[in-house]
Image (tube, rainbow, N blue to C red; front, side, top):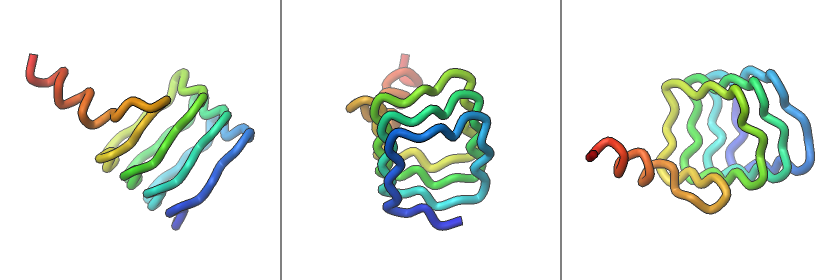
Length: 83
């Protein structure tokens, strides 16, 4: 599934399964992703802002450059791994 550069604004994708997708450079604002499942997804340089991530599962994903509410997640994880 090609979601590269897609914009998701003020929608509910609760409990969605997003599998084997390219969502690079996508933008997610005011989105309900609670209980969603991401597997084999390219989230490189995606931006999530004010997104409900309760219960979300992300597995086997490229998260380089992914930001959630302005925080670079790849850098945060790298810093945590060094401790």
